[in-house]
Length: 362
Figure 1 (cartoon, rainbow, N blue to C red):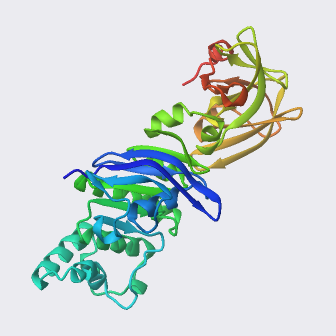
Figure 2 (cartoon, rainbow, N blue to C red):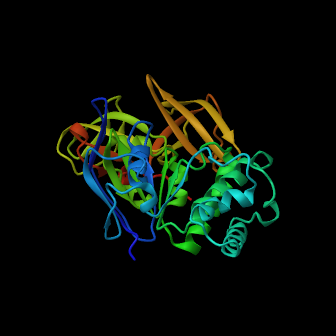
Figure 3 (cartoon, rainbow, N blue to C red):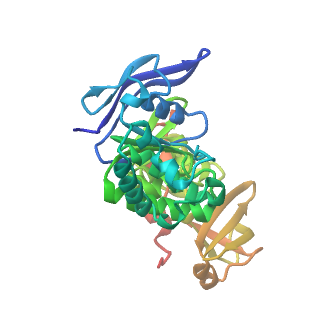
């Protein structure tokens, strides 16, 4: 039985405010897909519609060959994991996981076997008798996931499942979840506003803004080819420079060359990631290093030139090798970038060979 999720022309409004606007999306069978976007983009509303916790104003939702648009949540075969666990505090870990099975009136032997199987799966076999208050945040989230899996759902929906956890636990838990998904291959859709989380976990990422899908694709494809300025800025830090094209050359309006691009003459917007900004020591350099912040293996360099500021990034080893220091003069080489024309047209990749050919990288 297919577990593909098909969302067709779905719209939803609340008090006249459009939250989802004619959304079309397919989550492939066995896929782990991330809905990524800022708060208010419609991610959680879409997840709730799939789960049956809310109804669309228009459009349809199918799970496999079944039209689930108006079905009760219990009839959809959906497992739902919330950000704040939603565990029963008066029940042990064992009883929390067993709850969906007891609702289905499963036999005691079946319940015991299934819960033990899930406890092993989430690696909490020794904690079956504990209560939620006696568990860490990461352990509680594992129990919530096991409870969602207990009823053997057709699809799994996760609403910011790691949002309430600290950074280290989040990282470890999402790697564990990825490994779990590779074992089970259950069709999974999860909501997040964290780009690193989405890219680390998902087979495919869907970026949303203002109730619409801006772009969808693999993490690598989206990062290397953002569809518009919003996607580029949302997916990590970027230097945004007003620029113009003259004879194929891209020149910052502040008066320095960026590279070349196959675009007609006229105004453009340039987006350059910090790792594509390379400061090179030069006694008479036009740029000055305002600040260097080293965070372990990585270093961030703040550069200024008149009223223009740039952020560069390199490894700590590269920083030491280059001999850069706060207050030092440098020239800047650009090794990559994305250009958007008027009204966000594009993208066009910035050709930096002419500006970076003097630099020996590596």
